[in-house]
View 1: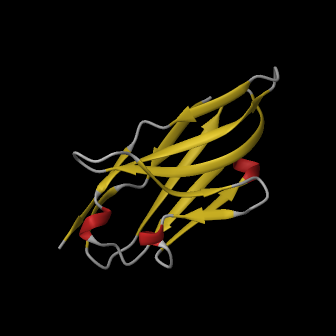
View 2: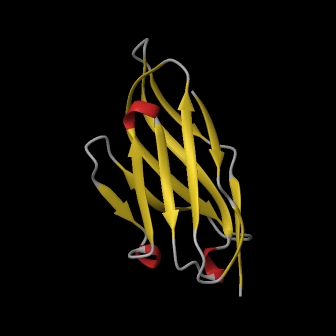
View 3: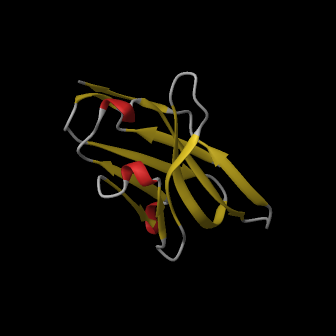
Length: 119
């Protein structure tokens, strides 16, 4: 399964960005879709994820500022980021888990997109 991310960039503190991640390939079902981030010298952390049923989970520091959503018809997940802070600066990675047409489970990662928030 191939993931293509878009939407990163440079923004001033308080600004907004929207990340997108589209999955392609022989996908039968998609279970969870999520966004992780990794800042320099830090471990990768889960920012937000969403199940096939629409249940969401957020990192405490982004609650109320970020919104994750998905378009099942397009196999796409979005992350709307608002009120961005310099500490949100990181490389953001998309993660998608599900099942292929052949029945095999998959767990795919995007290439990462840089988000830089200036103060």
